[in-house]
Length: 81
Image 1 (cartoon, rainbow, N blue to C red):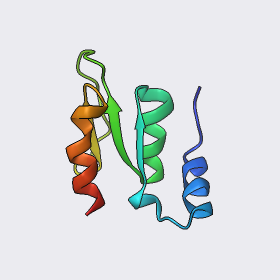
Image 2 (cartoon, rainbow, N blue to C red):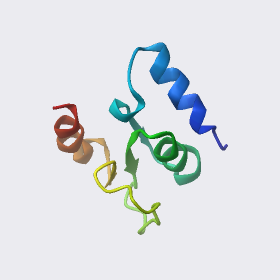
Image 3 (cartoon, rainbow, N blue to C red):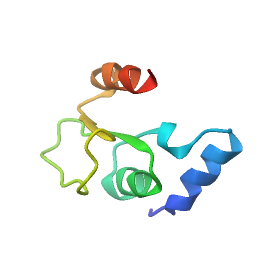
Image 4 (cartoon, rainbow, N blue to C red):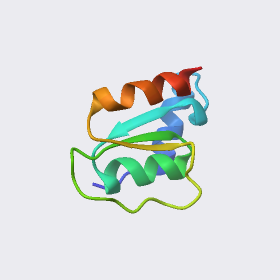
């Protein structure tokens, strides 16, 4: 299911957050990762041990691939500072 990047912006706005401070966590490139990156959010892609994925260019510092949630915790904490 493809989602509109504007959806994330609307959710962030309703909660008084800037989209660049939102961290979206998901396991699907098409439904989770790509839309959130286009919207301007930070993204944790849960790879669950799958092979390498192709990520959009210029996402350094906003994108992290993790095998599971536990592996993502240090990065999300660092982003929260």
